[in-house]
Length: 529
Image (cartoon, rainbow, N blue to C red; front, side, top):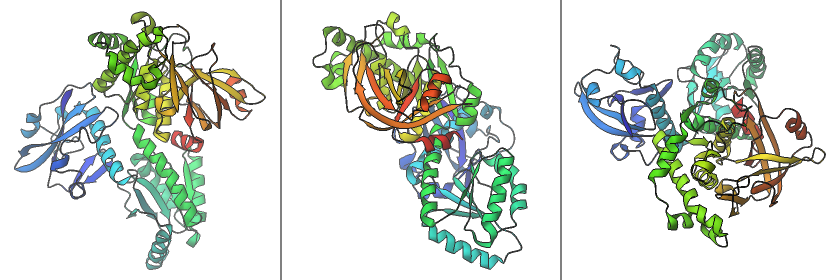
C-alpha cells in the first residue's frame, strides 16, 4: 500500500475540477457523497482493485479541507501531506493555486484513479446522467422555440440536466446536442473543435423535426462523416428515443467501467502467441486501459510464501471434490494456493484483470492456474490464460458490457457448412456455468482443470486485435456441451452463421476467442466505435 498526497479541496469552494469533470461540492455534501460517514470509502467503492480514501486534513490558510490520501494500486512514490498543508500545492487541476508545484506533477496516475473513484460514486448513486445542450438559430423566435423545447423534452419522459448553449461541461455525462432549429449548421461547425477538446464521445444529435431541425441535423451528421467522426441522429417517437437512450447509457457505463483500469501481464505472453502482440499506447488512448507488466518471479515468490490450505481449498471446489481421482484431489490445495497468490498480486498492483503465462506453472510448481482463473473471473477480476493480452483486453471489454468475463477458448473444429464450431479450454468462469467438475489439465495431465457446463442459449463470440484496428463480433447459439477425451476440459458447441467460418479460416484474430452470454453485438460495436 502506498500513501500518496493527491488533492486539497477547499470545502468552501463551489466546484472541484478534475480534468474535464466538474463536481459541485454542495451537491457532494447534500447527497452524502462527501461527508463524515463517507470519508473512508476504501471498502464501499472498489475500482477493480484501485481504491482510494478521503480524510480530513489540516486547514489551509484557515479553510477546512478534505484531502484524498490513501491510494492503493499505483507504482508512484507518495508525497507528504504536510507539504500541502505548508502551501506547496499548485495548479494541478484540482485546487486553486497557480504558483507551480513539482510535487503534483508526478501524481497523474493517482489523479486518474481518484477521478475514477468519483465517477464510480456518481454512477453508483445516479447511474449515467443525461445532459442536453442546444443549438438554435438566432433567426427564430426564442419564446416559441423555448416553449416547443419544453413540450418535446417533457414528452420523452426521461431524467436530464438541461445545459442550454453552455457547452463547458460537455462530455462528462451522456451528452445530447438538441438541434432545435434549422440554420444551425454553421454554429455547429464553429463549435466542433471545442467539443473535440472536451470529449471523444460519439456526437449525438437530438431533433424533434420541427423548424427544419431534422434537415439541419442531417447536414451536420454528413459533415461529421466527411471529417471522419462518428455521430447519430436521435429522432422518432418518444418511445423510440427513450429506448435508444437506454442502450446508449449502457455503452456509457461500459466506457466508464474501462476508463483508467489497470490489467496485469504476469510473465511474458506464451511463445506460441506469435500473432498476439499489443499496442499499449493505442489501448490506453482508445479504451483507457493501462497494462502493468509483472515478472513471473513475483508470483512464484508470493506462492512460496503461502501454505496449502487443505480444508479451505476443498470448500472452494464444493461438490466437485467428491468422486475425484486421487491425482486431482492432491493437486487442489496447490491450485488454490495459486489462486490466493494471484489475488494478492491483483490487490498489490491495483489490477482489475490479469493474464498469466500459465504453462510455466507446470514446471515451476507442478500445477496449473485453471482453478485460480475460474475463481477470479467469477469474483469480478478478469483472468486470462497463456499471457494472451488481446484476449484479456477482449474479456475486459466483454465484462464492461455484460458483467461477465466470458469464456476464453480455442476453436477446436469448424463445420463451414453448418456453422457449428467446437470451442474448448481447461478453465471457465464459475459464474457462467450451471455446474462444473474437475479433471487434470489436458495437455500436461497434471494439476486441476475445470470441466464446466455452460447453459444452452444465445451467445456472442468476440475478439479484438492487440492494436484495436480489427475486431470480430458474431452472435450465435450455444447448442450443447461435450466431454471428449482428446480436447481441453470445458467444451461447447456454438452455432454461428455459416459465413463466420470464412473469418476463422481466412482472417482470424489469433486463436483464442471470447464467448459471452447473450446477444450483445450492437453494444460491443458501439463501445469500440
